[in-house]
Amino acid sequence: MKKFVIFIIVFCGSFLNAQFTVSIDSPDAKLGDEAYLYTLNGSKDVLSSKSIKDNKGWSFSVPNSYEGMMKIYLPKGNNAINLISENKNVNISFNLSGDKISTIKYIDNSNRIMNEVQDIMQKKEIILPALYQMISYYRVDSPFKSALNQEIERLSQNVVYDKSSHPFIAFYNDNYKKFLAPDATSPIISEQNIIDFITNSNEMLESSSLLKPILLSYLNNAPKASVTTSIDKLLKAVNVESPRGQTVLSELIEIFDTYEMEDLKKKYLAEATSLKCTINDRLAGTIATNKNVELGATFQNYTFTNPKNTSAKSIYDVKASKKIIMFWSSTCSHCEAELPKLIEKYATLKAQNIQIIGLSLDNDKEAYENRVKDLPWINDAEIRGWNSSYAEKYNVHATPTYFILDSNNKIIAKPDHVGDVINFLKLK
Image (tube, rainbow, N blue to C red; front, side, top):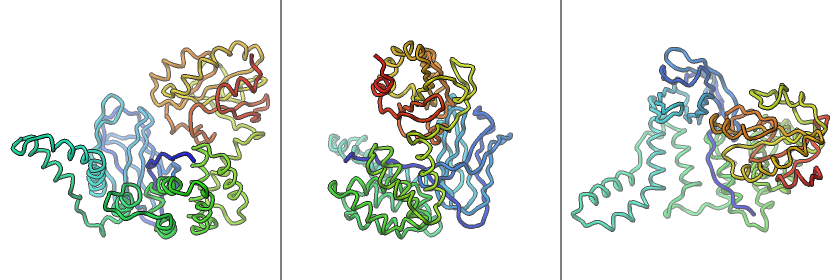
């Protein structure tokens, strides 16, 4: 079984009735007028609200109580800011380097504490071991050794805060350390420990961004000969007819999709679609997205943003006997290896009335423009990276990703690589 890469995805949600504001102070920032506040359902971004910049910056009103992580997305420059809320007003400011955010100042107390805690935590994981190695090479009376000792002492301490006043910060950091960054003194985390945690945690599990990486850890440590047994044990404990159980099932299906574990994906997607209870939004979205890109399904239309090499306004406007839809990026090494093969075959494809439509996952406009000028087929890009609308719409988890459509825009093939594209179309 493949080893999974553990990563944190920012997440949030809303629960009880209340209200607070999220403010970004940046009157001089040249990042356009629009900003978006996102919450997450599982590991999925869900748009909460949109703000138009005034003379102070941006401000969002959040109508519901919420304790968890949030994300603010600024399309110009493809900037994202990760924040937390403890159902209190949030206030930050930032500095720019060009059109990229370089430094963020956390003004409200919750975000300031969270930033300090995470800064120390990351340095403990990465820098502290290196300092312990370095210090042995210096004399006792060395000024640099004295400075190293001071930094080691500082990093060895924890940020002190009142956990009862900051329940989300305590929940996130205590469980991150326990499940995802244990040290030599931490007790061994068993399969049952993880099941109990996922089953019994309060709503902050969904809002903490911890669920997906903990599931990845669970799968990594499951016995290779009985992965499905471990998965079934977890799903039985969380109850797939409950909202949490459905969110866990949705996350697992998408993990299997991302890591190309097709058999597991099919098994648990079938289990999801066979549920007779009310389906929550998170799982319903996973089911619908997968259904939309099944073989034989009609590929959903997409209206181009700034198309190259065509006057067509959308995918459906492109008239061809077949269409190759390719999701790619100028920073993708696998794409760079495959693009020349498509360029080589493009004249033959055109002669057979087959068109290529490239939808880019680039977030750097200059890099995209420099690369796309050498690509002769239809290209389009939102320049929003993985925040591009079509990444979610077409269930794209990696680049390159290919779909082949017939003249009626039905999906007739989902090749893994450019060689499969060439073989399917019987190109010489």
